[in-house]
Image (cartoon, rainbow, N blue to C red; front, side):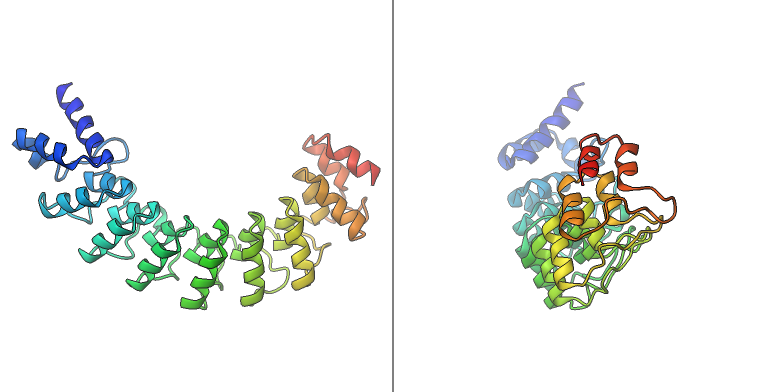
Length: 304
């Protein structure tokens, strides 16, 4: 019991960056000093290096590496290294220190995520720049077939998108294992400025389809992003009556996801017939709305 409490205390000190107290604890217990160098904690299997990098305590990280001689490539149960932690949390000083000490730039954690991919989940351009300037490969893909550009497209920072296109001009030309492009992803998540940049700088085919036959326009409509849908019509000649793999058109998809305004846009502004039927099973938008019990949509469809 006492040992467990001591371990918790050490982790607390690392998380809070209290290096002096941490040193005192280890000086009182020489065996513990040896043990912590290779110890993995909790269900995640994190080491002290992971905690220090995650919380951004460079002084603690430096002590662990240089005084305790901990291995900077130690990984946890998800194969995540300290560099993943520093990059993900945006701690540039810790990240640059690890890189200076020789950390592998494109190390893979579970699901084949690199530190650069994890950095792209945050809107931190400087961290992304640092990693690429140190040799990170922006074209690597994770197990789902996403590269860092695809990930950044989901997060919606146009500056990061513009930077990645500058340093890696072909990074846009990618699709996931289910054939979804960054354009699909940006449209689905409502990232208007990113969609605009992709249409201006990339050569996506109009109405490119994923494995289910879904187009970026459909993604925008079924998630209620009418401004993006309008952008596709104006800049990309999107087809607003295209059908997916089961024959559902944007109208039907909007009914499924209860997008009242999107239905109004399609019917009132674009002239889509409210009783348009899905070609494979001959259902109308009203059928789709009733099927998923969106009672607020059914009156809308009936009024139109």
